[in-house]
Picture: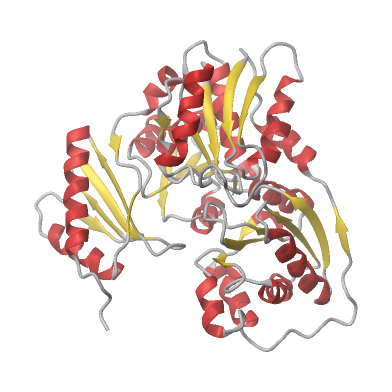
Length: 465
């Protein structure tokens, strides 16, 4: 089946990006047509294109550029880049952009993240479905005048911009960085190297898996899975480091390990960064998705800010940030969004905020973050089920009439009680049902988690005909 067949195109165009296996679902022809369709839908005269280190990425990015040029628009190829570096290029140059990456997915996958000028998101309701329909339609007609293609290096400017947004001053820090053979292996040395420019302070960088390798020979570049943090946790302890940073494949997400080797919840980082941003701009709005710890809205309110709850997913959060002029937004998955970074997500900028907060004190990271932790979370627990909708319905039925329990369906199913809450939702990118639980204490969280997992496993194993 050709990759531009309607069924395949509908399969790879997700809620807020394009994602599929190479070459059976995503190949140069689909990329080429997507480039041409993107020009038409975005009304673009110039498109910025970047790609990650996956073996298929350079050829797919080149094919996309060919489609853009054939449609009459110019192409700025920035080459190897992190996703937030692509957002920087889109924002600073004022052009729509396309990033070729499958983020944390295994090596067989690739994908395309699209944005309009100023790094504004392109999701299902803001152009992605229109692009999808054009790709699965008749072949595009070439423009009378072909666009030009040229190369541009933006890495240095990207690094300078980030360091300017979150200056790090104070004591010198020893930092272990696990790039997971992903794009942080390119960006981290440049960005963190900027911190050594002044007297004192700065960082001693201990690199792990900085070799760019889209086959991921050491571990998956997916730090939300605890198994992929084990190497970093061990190295932090061996090195006696102040903290560890782990990035996913396209380096737009950042996870932190403290000096004791303990993984830090992204909700804790959301609270820390929210406090820093509210100190800089009192009374500002802070976005948090519905899976973030309930401590985040409590803290924002206590500090005089306005918390706003939203669905999971970057296109939803960026849209809400634009509507509310929020200064910052955080997600449980390690995505952090900044108004001063065109409302885009940047794992590296979140890392700089963490370094800045730590360098300004003599306390260890665990002590610094203790003020931003109140509840116990399960982390994301994934279940493969034959019929996600039926499994979710089974859980909903079990809790529908429980006294003192509230249900809402902003995104999947959220069930809230006085001392706990959980959210159960289907993945937008993988055939999984995702469960997140939070409780006042370990025993409460464990009990609720296990009860819900038992209900999921008791649901029908196959989808109804």
